[in-house]
Image (tube, rainbow, N blue to C red; front, side, top):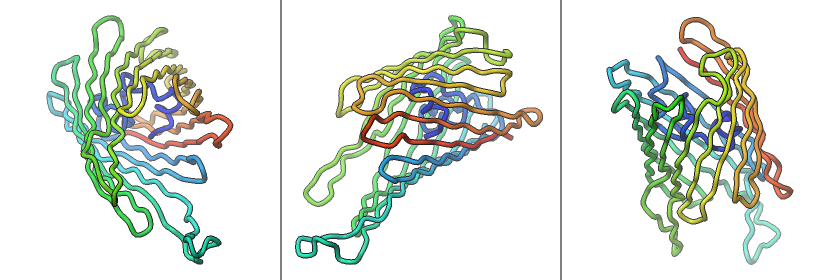
Length: 277
């Protein structure tokens, strides 16, 4: 979720320094000052749509404790119902969709090391069947002290296996280990470039790699790109962002991203709006 992380090729675990961290690596929420919010619309594949939102509040404690909440909803087009005896359709539609609601907490264990976790309640509906479960995300981020190099680790979608009828499903567990740092300038400079890369391991697949870059100009305009290795369809991604500082720590931002999905699917488009106050 979020046009900024996706535009950087999903290589975001070590970059996570804004409200998008709630979805990618909750440890990064400790960088938030005050309150931050975001909302994303994704035109996903095969005429489906994804909506997501998050809000987080830094409590101002010595350890930078930050509380947050997330929401993700998937909406598919209604599917015409067919049966063995009525292969041309029954005249009814099959409604489907998913929703996930999460609570997040992050804190600084030291001035260089942050930890965060999210617990999500998930519900998936397919016509008359509905399945609910719970998943846990945990993440860490460590400032190494060497220039601006950051090391991060995240585990996403840990939860119990579920059984629907006679079919058993397991959660799509994912591990991420990443590095990120500025190779030109520093954060806050009139221009700076961040490079990031990470290894991503899915429990049901081989090792994958994500790489990404982000160039900020005048702390207002961002240009982004990324690439994924060892995917069947997903490959490169591009994006841009515009941020407007209002006063103090208050700001508004708009981000967009484009992801190439090969010749079999239309490229997903994302637009994200957010801010801090």
